[in-house]
Structure formats: C-alpha cells, structure tokens
Image (cartoon, rainbow, N blue to C red):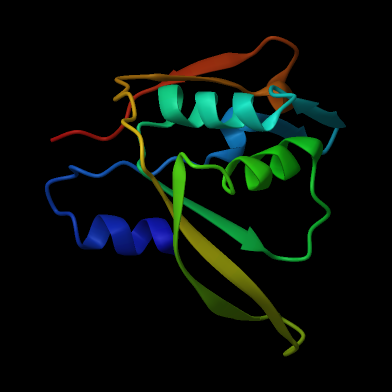
Length: 138
C-alpha cells in the first residue's frame, strides 16, 4: 500500500521504493532464513550503499524478528538516522478481526549512494539464484 501511494504521487517515477528486508535477509518457506548482515553497522552500510532510498520505514507487526531486523532497528537509533514520525495501521483480516501495528519512519542524515541495479538472491527458487533488478524509469 505504501509503495502504491509513493508511486501515485510520483508520475515521473523519480522516487525509488525497495523492500529493505530483501537486502538484509532472505526468507523461504522451504528453507531457513538466510541473513546477509551480522551487525547494526552492516545494516546501515547495506541500506546506504544498495537501497538508493533516503527514507526507512519499519513496522511492528507482531511477526517474530530475525537477527537482521534487530540489527536494523538498532542501527536506526544511531546518529546516521533521524526519527520522523510513527502512525498506526489497522488491518482487517478475513475473519473480521482487527490486527493493529505501528509503523515508524526514519530518514538518512548522511548521503546515500544511488544505485542503477540491485543484486538480490532468491533462495526460494534454488540455491544461488540471483536477479539483478533495475528501478522503474521513464
């Protein structure tokens, strides 16, 4: 939903949205989670050098956190980031039950590197499967 709203307000596709967790760890229903970082400093460096995004959004959705997502949250407390705001999300499930969680928005305070491609592993498609992904451009 967030990506839709960003792109709807950006008809020239000047902004980039990246699912940051794909840069920090890979999940697969067929194998265990593979983590690509092992410290808050690495979380910062990966997002600074490979995401191309100056805004970081994290959610507290009740899903158990990986070590990589804990490293990210610790990195966000550092001087390289500024906390901007938070807001609640209410998701209505098929059962009619509400699921509430919070979203926090942070901004990089240091320059980020722009990237033309993102090299991402897709372990759910097989060992060593990777794709080079380019942001949408017009």
